[in-house]
Image 1 (tube, rainbow, N blue to C red):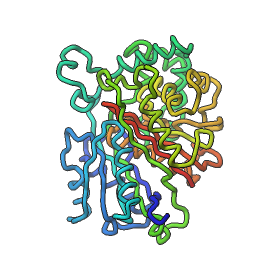
Image 2: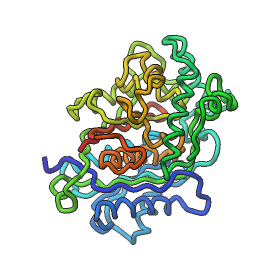
Image 3: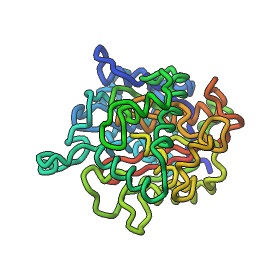
Image 4: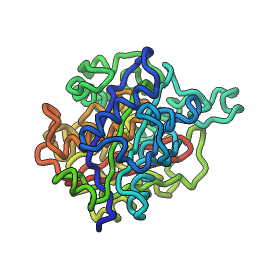
Length: 382
């Protein structure tokens, strides 16, 4: 049991656009906060794993660490598209579980330009870009339309996800968009790819987040209330995917990669969907929350839309989702977004979320889904 990984500190740099700051400075800010939260100094860290999209800032891990002074510890850069932060956390957990280290940093950093992600980041081939097949929203929109046709999911239910997430984003000082939206504003915003409108999407941006992981035996030196990393699963979609991965995957009778990762995470944690207090998931667009909530086995197939309209996913409902506003409100700094979810779940489990606090939160799940078929599911508990 001494080698089980726990989280003793978390930190975050507000997600947004910060042209005056380097990506290393964003990372240092989040690391400083996480170390202070854990009552640990950087010199005590034995290894560091850093998530970044990897195409613009090679070697960013060492460059970020060197802001604390030169170090000889192993520093590994990790790239797994939008699931990078989850893969990073998984690597940090493995390093502790195998007994190699007792104190490890998991960090995510990113600076993204405005607009849709570049093909180099999204995983599209050059021929797909030339054929006009390199814009993610078309695939998300097709999945939304398929779900609407198959289960009767309504455009109002999809829009309500955005309304909910903007409501909580307005209460989150670390979100880029801190303005509530009405259902009418979401529905009447410009159509990007039918049926999805502008205010149903997240925006790529800048940000950083970090977590300090310790073995249980060492964590006792620093805290009496660590957050237990019950499980962290990283899986790849084994089936051919279109474009970025036809994000949610066509239904072919096979389990979606998110479901595969969720089943592994539930089994390892000894926890089922019915035990969860809150969930953070990949709401790259508003329909994503509905589809992923089903793929995570939170609701039956076709039940994600009614769960939204019935208030089940609101704070105060049976299973709050994206209590920090999700990336619809926060924006998505690709390498950092998953660890931003971890920041929120840890904050909730500690009872420190203020107006966003979920009552009696004991178990939280974080989920990310990335280009080329990556999916990560993490379960935390107190």
